[in-house]
Image 1 (cartoon, rainbow, N blue to C red):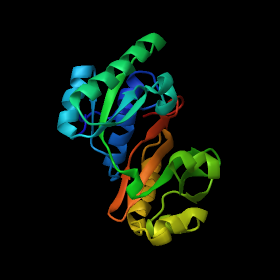
Image 2: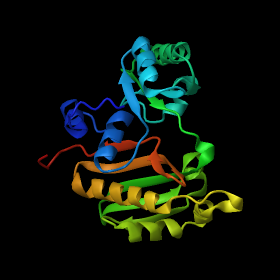
Image 3: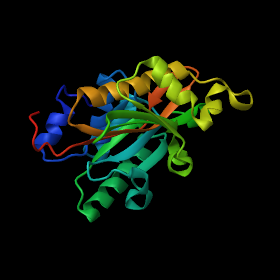
Length: 242
């Protein structure tokens, strides 16, 4: 389930004068590019969030949804992300906390409700894309989740890339052995991860307004790769026709 209305998220952002997409908008772009994402829905109030959770299926994650909030887990004293909500009552409580914090901060916010994935069952990877002023579209892959900024272990390629080039970028990572069944664990579907890398590269190439894509984390298991969170940043639109 998604909140997809058929409108173009980039066009919507342009009309509203913003350069940052919400997570839902970012995931909609990724889905159009062929990347699997978690099932999600956006609600405006606590009752809507509870209804969305019933449709998505418990347990769920509830997040603040606003282009003004890019670091959701750090926002509102921890109110920005609530994980493992198993009842409609729990969803309402988390939603009300988000809306209270948003009102106090003067932030216009909706509520993103998405399915919960077991991160212990796979490896968290970051996949990114950017439009470098010198080299043009670039894609990267590296160890994701909370470790992305700690280890700074990434492989880069000029976009577009095919699956083989994307795999090469992944396999040169110091953390690559984690994907191969480290200490008896199940081997990850590296081809599925490579397809995500290639799709992000294609997105940056195809949509000239996109200057940065941050998909962190992508959860990679033996069954595939799914984007758990995403952020897309646009240019200011000056000096170029859309």
